[in-house]
Figure 1: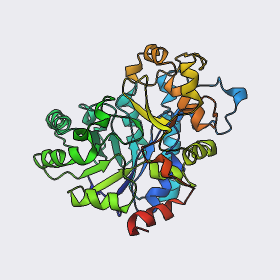
Figure 2 (figure 1 turned 45 degrees about the horizontal axis):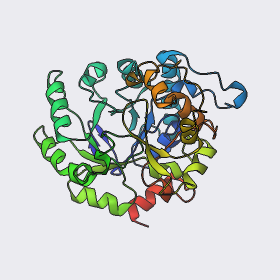
Figure 3 (figure 1 turned 180 degrees about the vertical axis):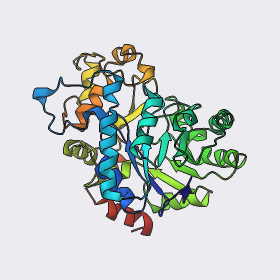
Figure 4 (figure 1 turned 60 degrees about the horizontal axis):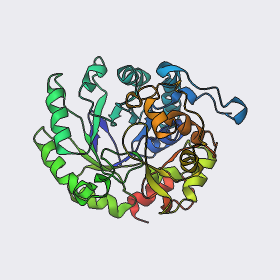
Length: 357
């Protein structure tokens, strides 16, 4: 598969998972093994704090400038390169992020080959990759209408998407649908892919990449047969030794069940899929940690207003999950998270996905 100027051996993209789930070890190893590894730009201010513990739990990155740390993102991409060399490497930047444009430029300057953006319609994304002609740009959409709007806006910049990711409502984390739509047949991935493939044809030959709920080679083959060029998978890579998540995070996923993986309310204003743990109980009982917005991570939260309404700060709770604080951590996963039964190497996972073992 080719995205922009970048050739990717396998038709598999590893989903960018934040905070701290797909950083240097996971993304670098996925790219090394022929798929596209994707670094998450979310919460890089926590990257240096490898020995996080309860005694320094108050040491949080203050302001979006530090939460989305350029120095840390540069280090993550540099360390990914130590693993994968010059193979293509992606970076996922949420459009809902405060400082979105600055983060995209940071990723380009750090050496990312492909920028992938969801969590909103990145209608001005090309503006932030000016001066980096070799960097491919890829939006994530959930409808043909969204792709059409993006392409119309991008034409003003003399750019079109180098590929497009189509994400259905079985993915981990935030969804591009409201709660009711997540359960309606017409919004499922297999239902929305055909119209987006047709829309993509109107704008040239951009590869269409299916995402959300894809687990094995049968799923991959299904979407390739439908006309997709590749798939994006996040949850399957949670169950790897190289995943940058804490050991506790991986244990939570391994011990999850189909019944405990649910859509949750989020300060972002859209449903988010996660494992139901002590956090959700604490929110209901109003014993969750007090919301105090210091990171100013995403625009829709309105500097903590929505977080206080929902009952938790998403930045703080994702940071707890990354750092192994089980009592208050938020553990995102896709609908197939309960199928993670043990840890494998990235190479083993990709061999299974390629060979169908």
